[in-house]
Amino acid sequence: MCGIIGYTGRREAVDILLDGLEKLEYRGYDSAGVAVVSEEGTLAVQKSKGRLKVLKEQLAAMPPLAGTTGIGHTRWATHGEPNDLNAHPHVSEDGRVAVVHNGIIENYIEIREFLTRQGIEFRSETDTEVVAQLMQYYLREYTDIMDVVYAVLHRIEGAYALGILCGDAPGQIIAARKDAPLLIGYGEGENFIASDVTALLAHTRKVSYMEDGEVAVITPDSVEVYDIDRIPLKKEIHQVEWDVSAAEKGGYPHFMLKEIMEQPEAVRKTISPRLRDGRVWFDEMAGREDFFDGIKRVAVTACGSAYHVGMLGKYMLEKLLKLPVEVSIASEFRYSDPMVDGETLVIVISQSGETLDSLAALREAKKRGAKTLAIVNVIGSSIAREADMVFYTWAGPEIAVATTKAYSTQIVLLLLAGLYWADRKGSISGEEYQELIDGLLALPDQIQEILDRVDDYQETASRYFNHDSVFFIGRNLDHALGLEGSLKLKEISYIHSESYAAGELKHGTISLVEPGTLVVALATYGPLFEKTRSNIVEVQARGADVVALVTEDRADALPEGVNGIFVIPKTHPLLQPNLGVVPLQLFAYYVALHRGCDIDKPRNLAKSVTVE
Ligand code: M6R
Image (cartoon, rainbow, N blue to C red; front, side, top):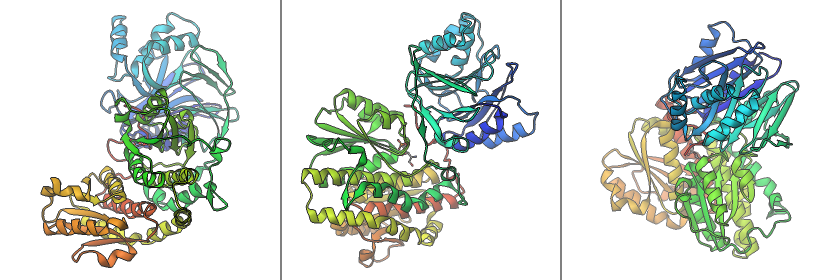
């Protein structure tokens, strides 16, 4: 959701904050702001509605904000429309405290009313401002700033990652975390806070992850962390492996295109550490090889594209394990009184590892005694830390809001987990096991082969970018894949698009198909090709234009009159979606490009959704 950065050191803070905000802008981009504190304790704030570049232009046109300690924020609005006043940092009425916040203060109305009765005047419509004003209120009562901070934290309810500057303690940032990500970066004579490690890569790779209830006091030369009872803690410092270039565009016009192109490498990096002497092996399971033993059913829960991976997972895992697999959207799962117990494995899939709905689903599953496995990309993220077992996708940082390489690596990881488990359980034949291992090894080169045909997708996109309604149809794994193809298209191009099981269309939706409607027909699932072929003919009969996704061996078997064909190499049916998704990503990308959309930062969206 929102992005937070904080710096305290010996360099001027503003440029470092702006550089960090640039890396975090994918988390939210309605407005941005910075606050710095001078050695004398004077706070200076600049913030504005719109993209970060607006703030940068404003700062460039005014005298520099001097100070070597500061905080910055990029916002995804929840409470209060995106405007200058609602932008962060929020400052207390007396100007002594500045606050940046990610999350939602749920009891802000009650606190706001209380403070208003005390004569404090609010300037914004946000929930966050109550934190700054409460700080001011308690500063009258306590002289020790940490007494003030703890009084505030005991008063507020909800989720927060907070960065606080106080004129009474220049050179110091106070950070607090509950249900929203926040990490501390350690430099030489300077230290940082950030929502996400990508903001810090240019300065340090040494980080520690704040846990719920923790409060940190950060100066240029020290980091002290306390728990909710103010007991000092010793934090583990992790070395981040990602390099700076991984979070840069590297010559590509958009992060999304770069990340699509990185898929062969990301998939290879996710697979190769999990193969040993031709068999699937997870270092993560060393000493816990029996993790899957005794499980009778599987529940997969996730949001958005990660949920679509879960949909693929249902088809894959049921086939491999012969166990029932249910898939649910995390925001539904958590409130559904889920039927999970000690014999259920709950798999939570999340690129960011911070999606609040998925985190809450994980916690609900654990509360009910289920075993939990997380498939996550961001190391040290909340979901990764809280699950009983975590398998990391090695996709590297994903910046574009529309996920691509994380999705691809999630599929292979889920399949690898299924293979390991099926082998242990004896539910897969030696022949099929080998076929899948061979298929996995061939995947990166096959993805590359598809990427090399980029002109085909570009050309098809140039013919269809001005359509306003698109249907994706497919059966079995192709149906699950269609959900992702449709989401990719709609989230970045703003074209209304729906995905249907191909056999379901005739039960209502086909009434929307009329001459010129675009139907993207996914026909890569070999066992049901003929059935999907018939569905293509049905929509053609109603005048639809059809773009078909098909394996190379079946390109000639498509019905006459198909208007566009994306041909992909053939592999084992369970691996086919890993190839099929690539043309769909590129089609969506080029459609959005033709429409002049802001591809990496689509309207109303944010990369990491840490609110309900
Ligand atoms: O970080 P997560 O994988 O938990 O995020 C889940 C969804 O918010 C995410 O997949 C979203 O749907 C993407 N914008 C899709 O491209």
